Image (cartoon, rainbow over all chains, first blue to last red; front, side):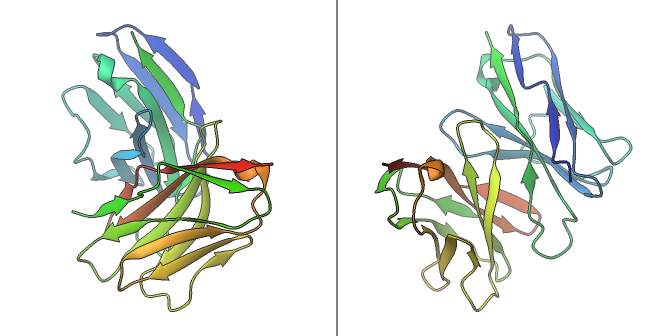
Amino acid sequence: EAGVAQSPRYKIIEKRQSVAFWCNPISGHATLYWYQQILGQGPKLLIQFQNNGVVDDSQLPKDRFSAERLKGVDSTLKIQPAKLEDSAVYLCASSLNLLKGTDTQYFGPGTRLTVL
Amino acid sequence: AQKITQTQPGMFVQEKEAVTLDCTYDTSDQSYGLFWYKQPSSGEMIFLIYQGSYDEQNATEGRYSLNFQKARKSANLVISASQLGDSAMYFCAMREGHGMRFGAGTRLTVKP
């Protein structure tokens, strides 16, 4: 079974530029999550989707970050414009169904963003 | 708000010995789930073990076991027979409702 796919793996941009990350969850997983992991910290949840609907985006800086999951499968996370403090690893995770059972989240390899 | 505390920034263990990584949590909910993830230097988060708040027995998965003490709100990870490949960051996490919160992590180094 294929795992969570993310691209690109690495991205370097200058501040005020825009950037987009892509995630394809495990097949059949209804729930998709985006996390931000700053160096030396644990992941922080930015947004979670159940199918194509947003369940929680309370920690997403909406003035510059946006995310969508239009067809309920893959998702994109965008930052526009980027700031120096956005330098982090962006992790995508998916789980079978937020509303059921243990709902273990499985993570992709992450995208390491460096903002200069 | 829920809170996860991992008080050990770094731990060392000799190969083949057991090690315990501490995790305490704070929640007012009765229903919650506790997770441990491993993050090697490659960056991917690898699921290790899960404990539900209503589970009466401690969870075990191969060399991993979770020492769940509900009254003390602790969920320590025990790794038996450490291997060099166990060197990584380890994160404790809690799901309460729809949210998921991670601790700051513990860096484990296994010495040969």
